[in-house]
Structures are given as C-alpha cells and as structure tokens.
Length: 323
Image 1: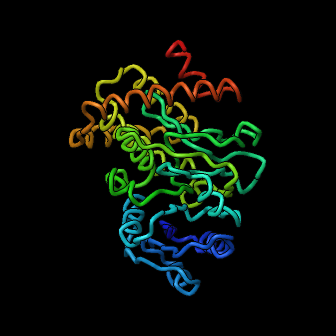
Image 2: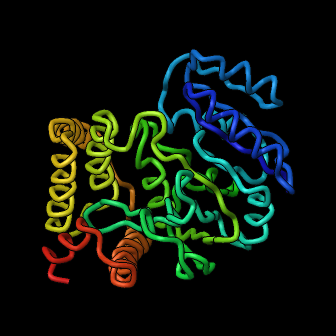
C-alpha cells in the first residue's frame, strides 16, 4: 500500500521547511511527497527539491483546489495525504492514520493549535442546513471528548488521508471554489454516494492556522462568502431556504465585527452570479443520502455545542431555528 503526500504551497518557505522535517521524521515513511507550487518567489520550490520532494511548478497562484488536483493527478499512490503547508505532523501521524482508516474511504486526525497545543484547531467537519460548516472543536480545550475514534461524514483537507479510488469515484476538487470550502464540497459529493471516513485522534498534527493570508483577511472572507453560496446552489436545492438565509446572514455579522463586511457583500454577489452556472446532479438515492447526511450533521453540531458550550454564532443560529 503506497502513500503520497500532496502539499499545495505558495511562498512561506519557513512553513514548508517545518513540514518537510516532520515528513522525514515519520515512523512509517511516505513513498513520495509532492509540492504543488503556486508560483512561489521565495525559493520554496528549490528547497523542496533539495529536501527530497517532488515539485510541480504551476507558474502562478491557481488556488488550493487546482494545486491539490495537479498533485493528485501526478501520483499513482494508493492513498493520498493532503496537507496544508502550515501543518507539522507528529512522527507517528501516518502510522496511526493507516491503522485507523480501516475499511473507510478517508480519515482525519486531531489537529491542535501550534501556538497553544492545549487548544483544538480541528478534528472532523460537520455542516449545517445553512451550507455553513463547522470545524468541530475549533477553539475548544482539548479533552476526552476529542480523544475518541468515531465514524465521520466530512473532514478538512488541512491534514487528511484519502483513498485514491475515492477521487476516481467522486471526482477531483471543484476548481471554481479556488480556495476555501472546496473540501466541504468534496465531502458533500462523497456523502451523496454513501462514502464515509474515520476520525483518528491518535494521529496528531499542529496547525499555525491561516498562516498565508490570515483568518479574517478580506480576500479570505470574500472567498468563503462566495463559496457558501456555491455550496447552497450545488447541494441544497430542495432544502428549506430559511436556514440558508439565517446562517449566512449571521456569518455576515461576524465579518462586520472583523471589519470585513464589504468583502462579505462582494463575495455574496459574486456567488450569486456564479450560482447561475452551477447545477447539482444529486437525484434519487443520491439526493436522499445527501439530505439525511446534512440533517444528521446539523444535529451533531447542536449536540457537540451543548456539550462544550455554545459559540455565539451557533447559539444565534439555533435560536433563530428554534432548536
């Protein structure tokens, strides 16, 4: 069973050096690691080659989705780990992931904040009926709740392992998303064909978090705002419109609080324009499976928020939905 790592990258050679060191330290080595370089100008590509990586020089910044796709296309490995450049892996990460994935299609591990490893950065993902996802546990203290393996529906591509066959069945990432929420779109497509994964908490990684642009950078907010609309257009046709309106407006209030309200508005307008060209292909059994997955996913968000304490956004969202 061969395993390759695919790393979409743009500048920040310092982050790439730290990730490369953690790749070389794995107790179960990767057969190859591929850097899909989005036109870095800081010597990142040269460093990766000297460090033993394989570099795909893309020439310009094509975005996360396109870079990941070029990396997947470049390898014939049986399993593919997709890793952000601002991740560092515990030395047993790959060994634990291979033990934990079992017969499922993908797996994610426990991701802790690099600045404070007592705090969860992410575990697995869930999505609400608003077409707004939650990286479960983000910002919460690490605890026994996050140390239990469990089946999962969605995972973040911050650091996750996928069977190659899954991309052949579900397709590659949708490059119209550019960067942000392209992994959520992929997860929804997997849910529609009945594919699930595992959360493997023994596989630990550290994440700097939005190290390239910043969590509330106006470009980040623009892309997330736009892509929320694309998710709704692709996968939520036939679902109730009130959760979508409520949830996405609430997310806009967060953008306003971070002085990026204009970027949120521009993103929504761009999303509405793009939505005219988007067509969801979920019919019959696919539509039924997707509907069940979305309903169950929102219920999981509600249950976990009750256990760990409500974030402002989710308290307001569930209050508006009277849940």
